[in-house]
Length: 130
Image (cartoon, rainbow, N blue to C red; front, side, top):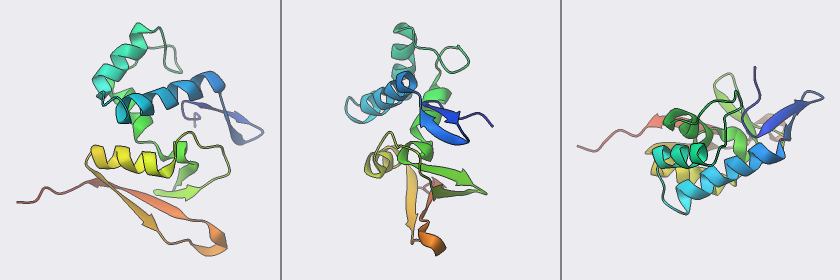
C-alpha cells in the first residue's frame, strides 16, 4: 500500500519525508497544545496551501486519520495488531495516548511479545457510562 503521510518508502523501509513530517508534527501540536479541533486544523492547513499526498484539500477525516495513526509513534499495523518498527517516530507514545484519550478511544499497551516486539492495541470508542 501507500506509505502514510510524513513518510516515503526507501529500500523497503519507511523514511521521513521532511516537509510532510513537519505537517504531521503541526497537526499534533495544534490538536494537543492549541486545543484546535480537526475541522479547524484542516481549514488552517488548506488556508496555508498545504495539500494532502494526492494534492487535495485537507478534510476532517484526513486530519483525524493522521491523529489516530500509530505509525507516528514508530509502529505499524500487522494483521489488526500494532507492532514496533524501526522507522523514526514523529510523536511520542505519550502524546499519541493524549490524542486517543481526547478522542474518547482507549489505548491499551500489551506486554512485550516473543523476540522483544511490543504491541499496542488501539481500541474502539469507549462505552459511555449509564
